[in-house]
Length: 308
Image 1: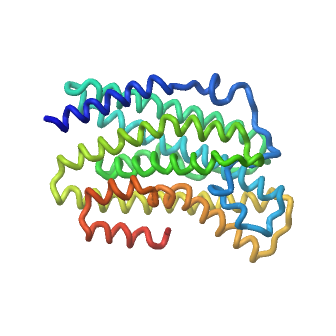
Image 2: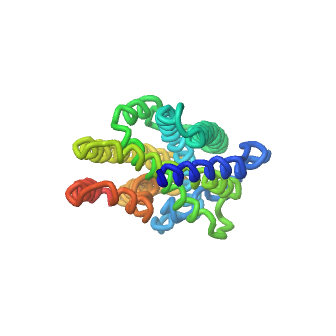
């Protein structure tokens, strides 16, 4: 009973925080601005362009901008299945804790808003970039594939995503005059709501976990491994497309060996952005570790090893 009261209080605080930090795309984030294409879109800690020291400054900036456009597309994609899953699990509270229900409905509403934010950012990015960019994944197909997996696994993946947003925000707050101020605000305002979502993710993931048998949790682990593998597959496809696009439109002329290093560098950056930065978040590893056995942890570790 005490746990139920404590959880209800946490949901109530989540609602209060959601109301307090609520922001608007035009009023608070974009504010009538457009992108300054003389600046990078992502900090080097995310884009990893500084590791490609043979690139000139203009091409490092261009590669960062390409990655920023893909970042917007990626979040437009993942927040589609997150919103759908949050609405799905909210039904468990429909005739129960109304604080929990409101927290989850607000969560879903904010995720839908984030989709619109990132659609706007993608279009604004495209306005100043050469023709030929392609975002390979199809959002509805990916969302359908993710949502076909167990709720335990989808909530685990969602928690992982929400927590790596926090890591990305930390990378964006460095006082680097070379990074777009508008993009810094995208990171800031996205983080403000995702930080609250991560708390609810953990609560819902634990709530679902506590209702499952050992066999069902084991299936959830299998599903999570498959989901991470699928994310890596998408990352590999998009990294290849973005590196090819960069090489087609960049200012410099690069040797076959340098082109190979560019492809590897973009893949490394994307694996960091969309997988590794979340896996290495202490909150995620602690939450996951509290719900799985040692052998299940070993299975996950083995699956992650080639990516990490």
